[in-house]
Image (cartoon, rainbow, N blue to C red; front, side):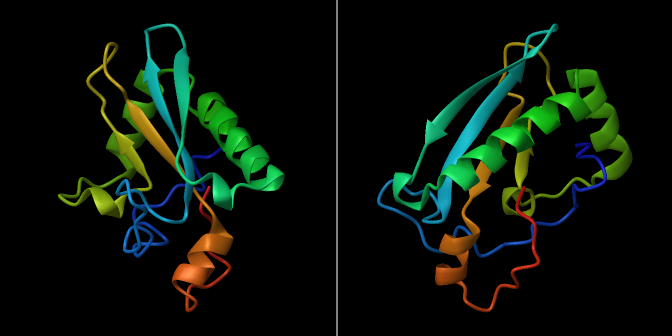
Length: 134
C-alpha cells in the first residue's frame, strides 16, 4: 500500500483531542508509534495509550499503516522530499495527523497516532464514518 496518495494537508478529525484521558491524551487514541531514522532504517517504539479502545482489527490496521509508511518512505530523505513538495507548513500541530521532525538521525522524526473510529464516533457523533484515520 502506498500512502503518498492517502495523506492529506488537514486533519480529518480535528476534535479528536477535545476529550482527553487523565494523562492528557485523546480518549480515542489507542497508541502511537515514535519513529526515528538512523541513516539506514526506520526504528519504532509503540506507546499504548487507551487499551480499552483496542480491537485486534484496529491493532492490525495500525501495524499495516506503519509498514506502509516504511515502504512509501524508505528513507528520511524520501519523507523530506514528499513533505516539501506536498505539505504546507502550519503553525498549529493539531492540523497534522503526523508530527514530523526532519532534522535527521538522533531525533524522533515521526509520531504516528492511532485513533479508534468507534471511540471518535462516541466522542463526536456527527463525524462521518467516511473519514480515513490511517
